[in-house]
Length: 327
Image 1 (cartoon, rainbow, N blue to C red):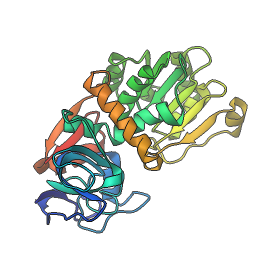
Image 2: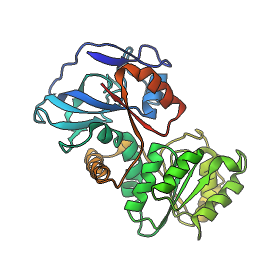
Image 3: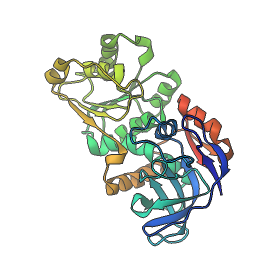
Image 4: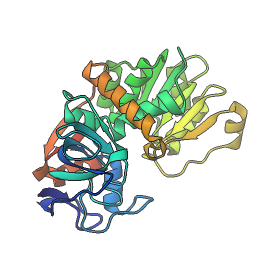
C-alpha cells in the first residue's frame, strides 16, 4: 500500500510502499480517508517527543478518519475517528491508505461528515475545546485570554470560548493576519505579542490587561509558555485559572512566586493524552456538530499523500492552515 514513511529521525517522510497491516482482536482495519498533520507528529519524527519514537521506518500521524474494512466493534463501511491511542507514537500511524486502529481509541462519527474536517477537529480541536469545556470550564460572562490565537488551535479556542458563554474573548499572537482572522471569528480584542519586544514582560502584561479590561483575564488558555505566559500572569485577575498545554514560545518560564501567591491563581496542566476516552469522544462529536453547523470555522487544506514531504516542512515551520493528508 502507499504510505508516508519516516526512514530517519529529523528528516521529512516521503511516499513509499508499506505492507498492508493486519488487525488482531480489539483492533479495526480501516481505509484511511484523512490523516491530519500535527506538531506532535513533527516532534515524534524529529526524535524530540518526550515518550520517544516508533522503530524506524514507520508511518506517521497520530490520528486519522476512515471507513471500516474489518472490525468486531464497528459495522463495515462505518465512518470512524481514531487517535491518541498509540498510532504514530509506538507503531505505524494514519498516514497511509490503510491503518489498524485500537477499537477503544476509536469513535463512530456521523455518516455524512467530511472526513478531513472531522479529522482536523481531533488533536487540535480537542486541545482547544476541552481546556474550556472540561479542564477549567468557562463561567458565563467571564473574560478569556487565548494565547497563540493565530494558529488553528487558537482560532478554534476563540470560537469555543464564545460558544461556551464567555463574555469577552481576547486573542493574542504574533501574526497580524491570524489576529485579524480571530477578530472575524468572534474575538472582542486582539494583542500582537511581537510589538512588545522579547524582554518587556511588564509592557506586554499591560497590553494584555488593557485588552481584557476590568481586572484582567479570569481564564487563560496557554499553548505558548515562556515570556507570553509570564506577561499573561502579570495581567491576570485575582483567582484566574491558567490551562497550560504547550511550549511554542519556550520550554521554560521564570515566574515570580509573589505573582502566583499574591493573585492566588490556579495553573492547570492539560494534554489530550490524559483525558478519559469517553470525554474525548463526546467532545469530538460535539465539535463535529458545531463545525457542520458553521459555528466553528478554520482554514483547512487537503494535501495528497505524494506531497507529504512539503506538507511536513510547512507544518514544522508553523502554519495557520490545518494540513490534512488525503491518501
